[in-house]
Each structure stands twice: as C-alpha cells, then as structure tokens.
Amino acid sequence: MLKIYGKKRCLFSYRAKQLCKREKLSFTYKQLGKDFTKAEFLEKFPGAKTFPQIIMNGEKIGGYAELVDKLGVTPNNAGNWVGVGAAIGVAVFAATNEPVWIALGVAIGAALSWQKP
Image (cartoon, rainbow, N blue to C red; front, side, top):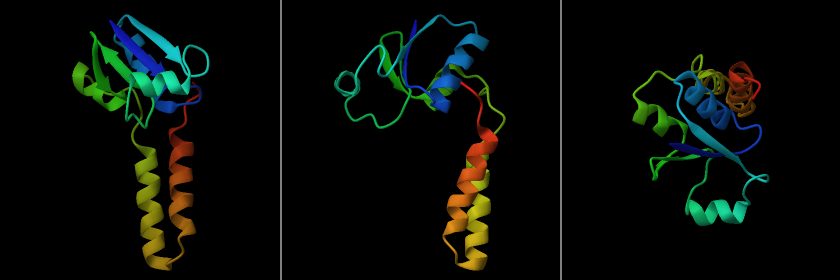
C-alpha cells in the first residue's frame, strides 16, 4: 500500500498519482490543507523540503523520483523540460552575461512540462 502526501498544483504530486494509476497500484492520496497541516507534515516527515512525500509498505521512501526507482518503471512524463530550459538559459547567459536568461529558460522549461493536475 502506498500513501502519497502531496499538495495542490504540485507537478510531482500529480505525477506520483498518475504513475500509481498507470501501474494499477492501490494508493491513498492526502493533500496539504485538506487532510493534514504543514505542522503535521513536518512532524511526520522531519527535514522534508519537497512534495510529495511517499510511504510504501510502511517505509518512508522520499518523493516521486524515489517512487520511480523503487517501482523500477519508466516515469510518466515527456522529459525534463525544466532542465532543458535551464540549460538553454545558462548557455544564453554565458554568451550575454545577462542573468535574466537563466530565469527565463527555467520558466520556459516549466511551461513546456506543465500538465494540468
């Protein structure tokens, strides 16, 4: 049994749920602000700084990437566009010395990877 502790408008929380559905895994999804508070989250997952946090068979395994690793499956996304956007932004920054290009590259990459949760 899987328990996913996520939050609204979190791409990786959405991807974790979609991966579980695709793999026909039984899971429970708990949402910040609806099923638990930030204080309860930090008590349950001390030191956690990202969403989602996932429990698999009673063991805290981490987030989406760790879930993919534990399941040994292919992620359910179209690629890491944020990384691609950042790489393009860094390349343009190196050529122009204008830091705004890094932020612009990350924003474009994030827009390309956005999937409606």
